[in-house]
Length: 437
Image 1 (tube, helix red, strand yellow):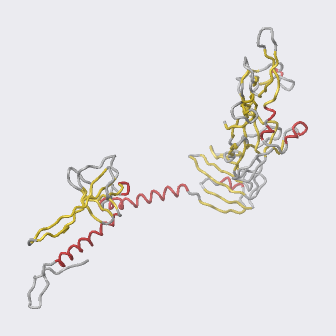
Image 2: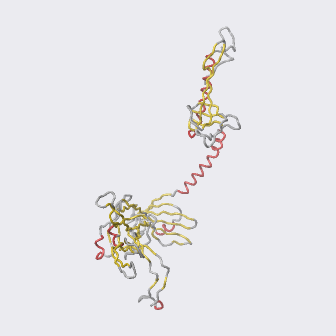
Image 3: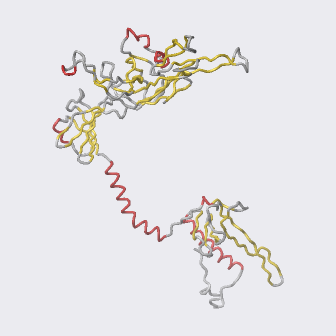
């Protein structure tokens, strides 16, 4: 900091307190003020040091310069800038005029852009004073301790155990993550991990095998339940590009397959009372509410690609090789072709005329898809299909599966240009396509 001895300065003749008043002295004082002004940078380059209130001007800091902030106009939602106005003043003394002797710079809120202005969004309007910062600092220990407590609650302790026994496994009821080696065999494997979660009074143990198969069991009412498979990680994605179906999935366990489903109506009878039925049920048929459901279509199993990469799925297995063996290594258009079959139907345009109409039969659709108009006829249709990751039970049935992606296999018509001409249109042509439901 610069200082001057205005009172203590001595002269060669023994005079004291006779500091000379000169231009150099005034410049020295001004340099002291400008140096002190640099303290404003402690709050940042641009901020409102004091907001104007009740016609009392405030103060604003712009890149280390402290300016008076006019009380008018007030800051509103339409204010976009802080405008700076510079005025120079002449001084007349001893018969002379000193040009631009004084410079005054003031700031105001503005809705319009001026020669010297700064965007309001670059300013910190809510400037934190030392008093507010001191209060926040006092509260910091409590805040930090609360954050650390929350983080520690979420974290699980990780352990490595070799030779884990069934008794030890049953006794683990506190949240933790355990990597087990050469331990008790579970589902044919001795190396696996156990994650334990506590939810109220219920303990969950999740078992993860080396091939990413997952099982879970719970401890409640003083005893452990049976291990059950988990399927929430069986996630797949489907996209369609120019009629081609692409599939993407994450890392899948070794015991799951990607299967093709179709939607069909469920029988309205619960049982038929056949030869294997109980004697009191023989010959009876028990009704149930009608509905539709997705079933495994022809036992088709689709190929699996690299985890996280898009690929075109193909058929790798079917339920009956003698009937559907030609579908092996085929893509979705060929696999779903039998859902929409070409055929004819009888139409009665009048009471005396009987006419056969060409078109398509769509599985699950009562109406006939054709160019003709009439009862029980329409110009487009679709069959509902789906792709799902699921565990199979063997006989073309499946266990509870993961996420199901539903699609529509469509038959529609469109017109094309006739003989390459720009204006004329040919007759309708039929085309098949896929879409996400």
